[in-house]
Image (cartoon, rainbow over all chains, first blue to last red):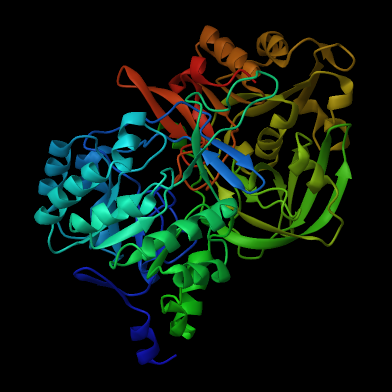
Length: 300
Length: 274
């Protein structure tokens, strides 16, 4: 394979050029190193690390995962080590290996996002930040924030003005009536890209107990069953904004990944399918290296 | 973690393996023997492999199975029919290929010079049987296995290649071996054999009873847990169990921090009852 082909599969998101358009979605590969026994994460566009909050979170009580034929429901509840431990213990390991890193962050209040951005600003070892404004497994209030265009625009602006050199992605929820409005708000706030979509709110019940499977009731639905929904949302967002879109949701094959580019995405993230097929991201990278024309957006 | 002390660290790989043998052991359990992938690390006793169920579109996630035995050519599992996934695996013909990741997790620890009393319940026999067969057993002073199930129909050890001097059976209904639970049997057998450390694997209520037994006797106790998993690499945090830490609760993954834990660290009240 010649060098030119490789160069052609780079993707630019705001101020940052990533080596290719294939990423692992937040929550899938932990803080980045957990999948290292099986794949070379250095060869990906990057990894979006597990969402961190300012302080460590215990997460939800088990059970946290529930399999269905078309994927899985999860209720992890943003268990994470917190920003300080992430900075000390997690980020340096990836920096030393030259992995493309997008730091996923979540908070509820504007001032918390200020603190986040100010603490992250002087660090190296990461190229982008993804605002997780749409986790369905924590307080309903937090998810409601992610549905509110004014809040999304305000938070995006707060973070972008403090992190001008990083690629700022806003991860949005499909659990809204008008996803384009939320995407436009992120763009207006200065986002460099939109990550679409987060998991879909879902529930399942235990027939013996008559109770929901998860203590919290609902969970986040992901896996191949959500592919058409995710494609629809990316398609809608692509017609509403001009910034790049990272397509996420149900990608289980090279063909699925290609469909996101047709829908208008400039890059993709693989999630739940990695649990089943650890080499999937590597296979997509190889395919797009060979056929960079697959990265052309549209037509739509 | 304390639980990983003296245990073998797994270096997992992603492999394909062919079914060499697949036969019913009792009404609900079957033995699945796979060709051992050449590059696969020697799995420690207590480690597991994460298997994709080859049944079309009915199942999505992989399923973890504890290693029952392993030699140069094969790797063996005991599988209990729990649902459709394990039923589909029961139907696999010899020669069928399985996709697996492994070995994964931490093994039971080496305990040089100590007398081990191992309590296995139902399918929880697998890692304890394997431990008894491996070189680690030479490290310990003695290794006695107590193996129980609800009824004779659920016991299958007599069909295995096992030094019967070192194993004692029980059944809850008294239909085979000693009548009563395997923990009740342990109360009796410990007087006969003595013990410096307890190992256990089985359903959670049995493990909890074993933990109470070990605590009463003031003995260290290593327990192997099972749980539903997604990644099996410690990344997704799906398979957590609560442990006591710094006066509160923390969550540890069964897949990567375990599946073998120091029983004293577990917050038993937070484990599922079944």
